[in-house]
Image (cartoon, rainbow, N blue to C red; front, top):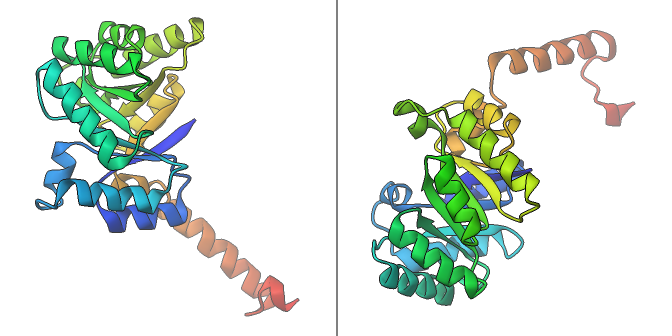
Length: 225
């Protein structure tokens, strides 16, 4: 299992790396828009420096035709390093580009996946990750959990290295459901990730433990005993 961070905000990445078992960072044009027009490649290079080479960085192309997608992918690799994952939306032209780039051993994250068939085509074309848009699927009455389960079963049955990377979450329940249905990775916004440990019931349990300790041992910590 993997947990990735869906953000391009440097301070969020720093805070997340201090606390959570983050294996990579994902980005897209919508996420970058929230950063207010930062210089693209210099900003992504800062992210690469923050996360180190041991974590994956997923960067999306913006063009729609295969030739330009391929050219953008090669530029991304030149600027950010050969291990960078290039995110390519799973359209007809995107699929053409994925097949060519995968044959060159480029790491591909096929994105904008809404259906099992899209995922199958991306897997057969050499994509390493299948970015399934969980909440967006629910909003158009697609059973996201079913699609993730079907893709995960197919990937396991065929012993492929491709993994389901679930994305587009609005609550913790969607994340846990995606994992439970077989997603090997979820990418989550920092604000949502932080809510996983900030429930009032957790805070109360910790406060109760502290109060009970103080009744017996006063203000001394374990180090004072």
